[in-house]
Image 1 (tube, rainbow, N blue to C red):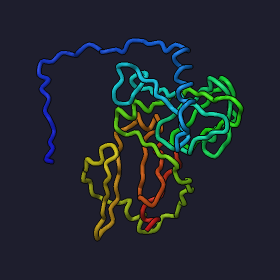
Image 2 (tube, helix red, strand yellow):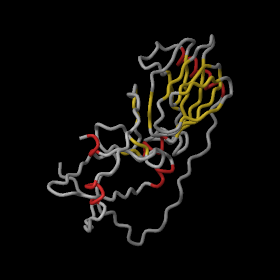
Image 3 (spheres, rainbow, N blue to C red):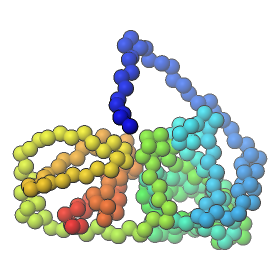
Image 4 (cartoon, one colour):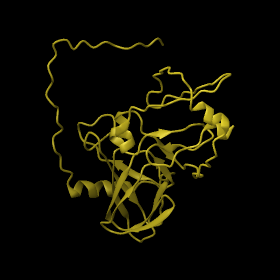
Length: 245
């Protein structure tokens, strides 16, 4: 399909009024009823009994606020979820029962009213080794990332191996004196792209237009499909495809 941009005429247009979402209260009885419904379901294959608590005005992102997603998570005694990894950050809050959470390879015993965060791109899962139902509220910026069409979620992700850093070769050092200055606008969102150097060295300066996502630890980079994803602004650099081959 031949797609092109649209020109939206704003000549003489005046700023519109803000369309604020009204406040909303979710009664305890409503939450308890949903907990019982989730607890009565057959165990899902991924172990995740979950409902998103969405504002009536929410569309894409299913937020309780425009940029905040809230989930109700339930685990029966002896259950655990599979592992996950995503570029949204989370705040977890136990409102019933207890159990444990594995975040970034570390085990945390969690009890009633405990609060903890799950940073972006940390592999995590949750377990209930108690005799009671475990119920958590999970707050995240997933709604905002989904509105921006950049929310990345993996189920059962592979373990992350440390990136090996190599000394610069003489060829690498010569690339730093490149006099060229072409400009390329590319790779919106998750668009897959690649660059080729052909018969000569290419030195590229990549400028990202997402300081917000760097601040939210949600800006991901994958130099090669053979390398793991890197969280820009958080991890200590990343390898290049020259090291992969």
